[in-house]
Length: 629
Ligand code: ADP
Ligand code: ZN
Image (tube, rainbow, N blue to C red; front, side, top):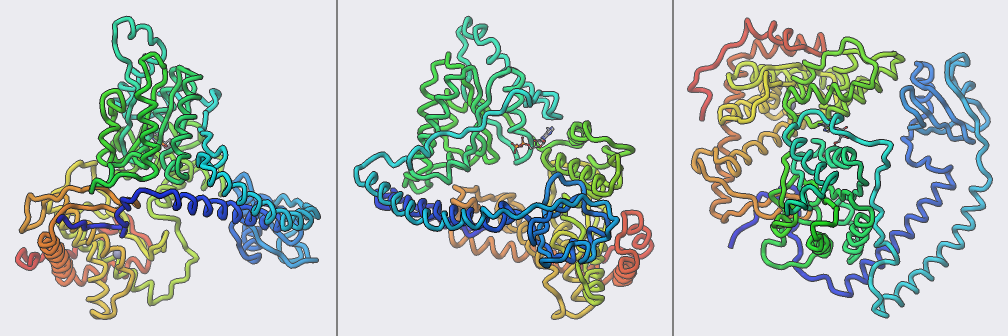
């Protein structure tokens, strides 16, 4: 019996039971309860002033401080509620409460500050509507439930009353996306140009008896521009674009998914030539349960997609484009000829492409002296969506600071914000913690600096960012596709450097939870090396292929219990080796560690050159013998 192991998120194996009629009824009851809760929630939001619950609650003192520091563009006052629109935003994002009977100016906002203040009378209707809702909703609910159960008993189809209508998004033509809006990915674009030609002049192909492909699969990491490309095909060919996401189906009730598919295809056929785009198709089309027990609800959805596609007769004029980031997980039936038989790989952008993508996204943002070349160099592994996000953040930062143009400082700040989270300068960290963080980060930096196969240190900081107390940042000097065992081992050792530095300076049991994510990182690398890459000592060159991923996306591998034990031992060996190497480096270079930590405490952030200046004269490689176990 194979054992399923390596289940990262603790996902359960999908149940292989067919859902019974009774369980459908229960699910649908839950559905109505859910609707009831939504109605109640919506009406209580109404009472409190519509939509206020989507805004971030902040204390009034915070509002007053921000107002006086010029961070606020506008304030709307509704009764006691204060809605805040920060500079750089178009609408209110925060809400606060003030004391009744005193104005915000009385509470401390400078009268001459440049803030647009509007005062709106709170609506008296809120209370009346609330009362009406309170009486009507329960009655409507009971009536609804009753009718619903009658329908179920009569064996009426279980499409919950017209919920089966596809509300596919149709993008309007005024916002046509063209291939020019997509940077890089020349291969994919070339393949898609062909599709554009099919859509534009199908006759040309029919005359020669060629079968026009009906299904096209875009495979690639999230955010690499798959949706963008599908839209560009529609834009270039000037045909309507219908889109829906597989994850939407996954949340539907029995039978609804299939009926939506039917509706979607019929709309597309009526508007042919046209494009149907199914995002995240893996959500409905993952391999059927490995143990042979078929029968999940989303299988009906998948089957309906296949039935619709099989019904295309070559003259339908509808091309279905699906996107996935897990092509290996797709049901084979989907990939057969006549279905999604054309595959286009969409890759993470290389350095040159990243520069082009950034250029696309800075095109309509006024900017000056920004260095996209070096930003492209620093963004290895980021997808187009991340780059678009950086460009947008940079514009927001510049706007918030009242600038007319985006400068390089904003670009760097935006990059760091997107890559590791925003700076939290005001997060309280006591002196003791700051010192510990400095040693911890210096530990990472020294180990990375000394070991030969680690990337150079790009930056070290003890300013809290995102969820971390500090960050040590390594950046590869160039994009690389492969990694060696040497490199993995150096990455693991430098990740251990933080914890080991704490232990050397403060004592073995004084170490803190600050190293938690480092240790998880080490564990992940070690497991991947042993299981997926055949890079362990005892099981060198043996890999354990992934079998079906669970419902919730956890990974599962196929190996015996005896092997599971060996894998654990090998992971353990790699972890111990990483610890020993970090220890050997830091013991040999304890002076360098202390020097770097004190420099960090002084300057908070050190750039690559500053780190090199401190470490270069001090560090030395320990004896090779000490580095291995
Ligand atoms: P996917 O569908 O692969 O998850 P999207 O197409 O939704 O990715 O991409 C999200 C956003 O990222 C796009 O709207 C676009 O702004 C940006 N983007 C991604 N790739 C590119 C690219 N090659 N060129 C320009 N922008 C891109
Ligand atoms: Zn760390």
